[in-house]
Each structure stands twice: as structure tokens, then as C-alpha cells.
Length: 489
Image (cartoon, rainbow, N blue to C red; front, side, top):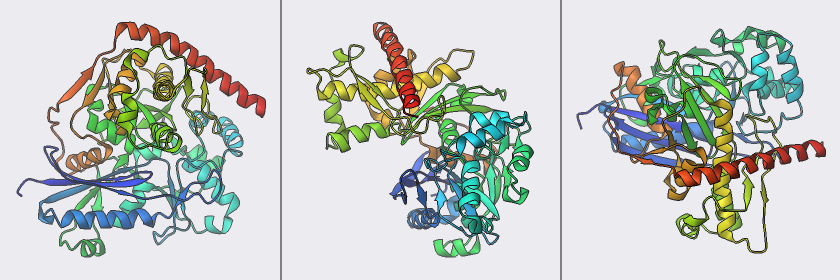
């Protein structure tokens, strides 16, 4: 094997993916390693961060048994965003990492938001801070575990902890920094105002590097564990949503991206550092010269609602069979509505306790109508995000990636709910491949994207009209549920 090979690592919420590609993006190794995180109390989600390191090392060991180490020129990394790791001066984790979907800080969130709003330069951060943000997690540890907090030398995001263990170098990229609620989007650096408002020492904040910047090579210890002789370069990496946007071609085409994974994520890129009032503005900064921003919003339950309905409620794992039971004539005609916000909503309403709901059930309602409502609910939720975050220029199409993109009927629903063509790339393109692309850019200085086979699913004009009417009713349902939450409080 003479071609240059690049490795991608994706530190996901419930699995770690390891892939190897050529510099022409031909996949020659790919494997997923599943793991579980901890739920020590209701609303808490944690993990011992060395779990990631152990799985990553095992995955790399398996990869190097199949691919000659001398052909591997670089390693890129991506992963779940926000999940916060607390390390001491020796680089060891001092407590379990607090994950992005942790809700323990919901009671202190209003106070944190109010303090951020008290300073003009930090007011914009109040719009994005949420439970699971590194800022709120740091403050929780300081309040509830002061002895542990005293041991913290720096905080890192999930992928950055793995990177630290691989290279011995602590750093973060602009994507994860800019979404941490500790960053000033106007100065493109850590927020001095946040540091002052919350009495956070500057030493807690790691160096920020562009996503494709080489931060170091594999340490001698790691090389020994992998039974390789050369210290392969490792780049800074980025969050999974930027990595997905990169591999999908969104930064080249500047078209929106939908990722149907554990969460349902909408990513809208622009090349001019345009900050939106709704959604989370994320600094991509693939290279030092890159000035692009993505605005992202999330339906937190995402494609998880699909597995919840089928596996937990219907007690089946035959996704294809259940979807075949849904007649296409039911599209746009379904009287059942479903709200997909089953574990809170952060982007538009800042309601961490918001729950899902069915409405419109009748004695003639069957499993097909209810399942279709579940699939439609996420599409409506994504459209609501798009309406709030869209660019002035209309998109030509949406690209959809992730496990949910494999569903023919779900793609058709998205096309008609959104009213735009859906581009589905027929080759495997995931965040882990975006991580490998970062390594290619970091080592070779650039990448030429191959032309990939893609399918363009067009919406039906009649269904667009029907779904526009149903979408208006969905918005009323969402408003009703939010008001119901307010009455409970």
C-alpha cells in the first residue's frame, strides 16, 4: 500500500468511530466501538474520560494490524461538543466528565444568564449558555465540589482530552471554544468579561488552535502501545457538527446541513463571519485564514425518537418493516401530531424540561399514523430551527447525513416539510471522515474533494402545500406545550 493514509477519530456520545482514508477519501478501514455513559442521578450524565482513551487505543491497535504504520501520515479528531473534562496540572482527570446532555445546572441557569446580560460584551453569550455548557459545568463543580475544583488546572472538551493523552499537548479548537459560553465571538478569543464576572482564572483556559493545525505527534508511550516506531502528527480537530459539514461539502457549497444522529442538528454555514440572533454561532476556522461561521440549532432528541418509538414502545428492531407499513398516501394527510422535544429544548426556547407529546389521537389511530407523526415531528422541529436561523439567500438544497438519512420515507418527509430538494450522498460521509480530512489539510496543506455520487430528492408541490398547513398547526402545538410548562411552574 503506497498511497498516503489518514486516520479519523470520532469521540461520539455513545460510540467511538475509527476510520482510515486515502488522500482521495477512499475508506480503507472503519469500525465503531459502542460504550455507555453513566447516569449517577436523575438528570445527570457523566463518563470517566479515560474510557474514551482506552477504546481509542484499542481501535488504533486494531487498525495498525491491518494498515502499515509507515503509510499513515496524520491523525484527525472530532467528537461530541460541550462535554467537559476537568484535568489537573499533570493532565489527569480529577472527576468524571460532565456530558453535553447533562441537566444538573438547570436551576442555576437563570442566574448565570442574568449575570452574563449585566455586561454588554458578554450579553450575547446569555443567548447560548445552557445546561451542559462548559461554563455552567465549571461553575457547578466549583459550587458543589470545591475541593475537586481546586485541583483543576484546565478544562478540555471530550476530543481534546483524548488528544492530550495521544500527544501530551493540551489545546482546544475554535469550534469547541466558541460554543463553550466562555468565548467572545466578536474578538474571537476567550472572553475576558466572563473570566471577570465569574472569577475564573485564565490558566483554566487552554490554547486555541485552528482545526487543521498540527498540535503534536503521538507520544513515545502511545507509539509503544501501538507497536509503531514513528510519532504520527495529530491535528487540533473540531466538533462533530463542523466535521460533518466539512465532509458533506457544506463549506464549499454554503448549503445547509441536517445531521440525523443522537440529536437532530441543523447547520447553516456562511463565509463572512455573520452572527445570527437565533441558534449557536460556531467559529469553524479550519485553517488560520478561514473566516467561516456555522449557525447550528438542535432538536435534542433527534433521530433517537425513531429508536425510542420502535425499540422501546413497539418492541421491534425491524425499522424497514415498520416504515413499509406507512402508506405514502398518508403523507400530508396524517391527523396525528408529535412534538419531538422529549428531553428539553435549548436553541429556540431554552426549556430544558420540555417534553414530547402526541395530539390528535382517535379510535381509528393505528401504529402507522403514530409512527408517521414521530417522523414528521422531527422534520417540523428542524424546519422551525431553519425559519429562525436561515440566511437571507434561499438555499438550493439541504444535505442530510447520519443514520436517519438511510430512511427513504424520512427523506421524502423532510423534502416536503422543508420545501427544498434533499441531497443524500450515496457514499459513507460522517464526522469521522471529516476528522480525517482535517489531517489531510494539516499535513498536505489542502485537499481536493472527489466528486461523490449523490441523490437529489425533489419535493412534491402538492405535498408542500399540505405540509405548510400542518406545520402551522405544529407551531401551535409547540406553543401550547411551552405554555403548559409555564403553568406548571
